[in-house]
Structures are given as C-alpha cells and as structure tokens.
Amino acid sequence: MEIDVAKVLRWGAMSVVLCLGAGTASAGIFDDEEARRAILDLRQRVDAVRSESEQSASRAGEDSASLRRSLLELQNQIESLRAEMAKLRGMNEQLSRDVADVQRRQKDMTQGVDDRLRQFEPGKVAIDGREFLAEPAEKRDYEAALSVFRKGDFAAAQTVFLDFLKRYPASGYAPSALFWLGNAQYATRDYKAAIINFRSLIGREPEHLRAPEAVLSIANCQIELKDTRGARKTLSDLIKAYPQSEAAVAAKERLSRLK
Image 1: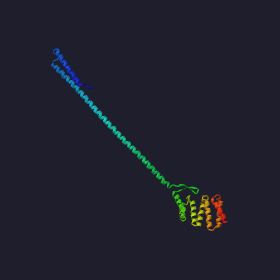
Image 2: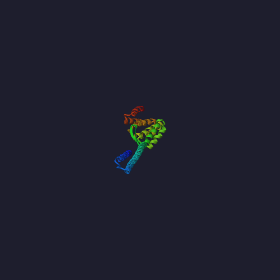
Image 3: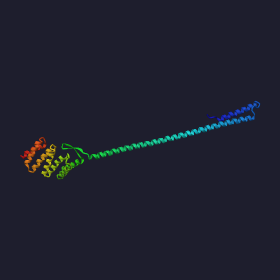
Image 4: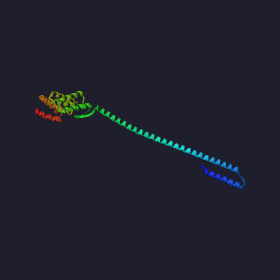
C-alpha cells in the first residue's frame, strides 16, 4: 500500500502547531526544546516512510522490468518454436515430394524393365487355326519372311523361309513356313523341291489347316511335271482324306479333267 508523504507532512505540521498552541495556552507544558524534538522525530518518521515508499516503488519497478523481460524472453521462445515448426513442416513437405518422386521413378523403372523383359518372353500366337507360344524374334522373322512372299519376290521368299526353318526347326510356325516355302518354289517352277516341302508339312501335321491345300499343290506340281498317273492318285487320296475341304472340291474337278 502506497503512503502519501505529503499528507503525513501536513498531519505532522498540524500536530506541531496544535502542540505549540496548546503549550502556550497551558502555561508552557511544552517548551521550545520539546517542540524541536517532536519536529525532528516527525521528520525522521516521514523520511522513513518516504524511504520505504521509494524502496517499495523501486522493488515494484524491478519486478515489473523482470516480468517484462520474462515475457519478452517467452515471446522470443514462442517465435523461435514457430519458426522451427515452419521449418520442420517445410522439410516434411519436401520429404513427401521426394518420396513421391522416388516412387514414381521406381514405378517407371519397373515398367520399363517389364516392357524390356516382355520383348524376350514367349507370347501366344494363333495362325492357321493353331495356337502356340513363340519367341518375339521367332514371330518377327516369320512375319518378315511372309511379307517377302506377299510382295511377289518368290526367290527371296525361298531363302528367308529356308533360313527360318533352320533357325526354328521346332517352331509352331514351321508347318505354315513349309507351306509358303513350297508355294514360293512352285512359283519359281522348282516343282520337285515344292513337292518335298508340301509332303514334309503333311507328314508333320496331317491335321493342319493347310494340309488339304498342300496335297492339292502336290498334285499341281505332278501335273506340271507331266506325272498324270501320280497326280490322279494324289487327287484321289485328297478326296478320301479330306472329303469336306474346299481342296477336295477342287480335286474332284481336276480329276475329272485328267480322265
């Protein structure tokens, strides 16, 4: 509690005056020496009160300054923590982006590896009514050879089909390759070689979709070679072996003309 020094002084002075007045009226109860002592005593008390008040005010000021320093320090700590949290949040966001980027690149790499592996893995193909597994290179080489045949370059087609059969003797494409090789040889009038390859197809895959056509082609080669007797037998065998085929229909027509 603050003490009003001015009020204390006014109260003291009034007390002294009253004492002096009372002393005069009371025939010298207090003499001058006593009055001085009273005033001195009062001043000492006032000084003590003032000193205590100043000390209290000083302590209050120090406490207030200390509180302000503590608050400022706390505020600085809070700001520092906020800055650290913002930094950590930014690092976390960057880490999340980095992880996402790594995962994306890993996925792309995995996809790329899978794509490259598939280039070397066998795949299912269907040709001439048959399904089988073929290596990518095997499929590519067969299609390239067939493309040469379809362009009408029959001499080159013989070369590429023979090369194909040497490289892939057990290929599922082999019966079809023999069929087109025989046709290329027929086109270049190499009838004997054509007969060998057509018969090879029939012996290898008698139920192959191209087998009836291969038998008919053998008869055509025999006709070109003037082997009428052989052609008649071949056509008759075709009609008996594959009676429901289109080749059998053509065989009946040609057999009738050979008679």
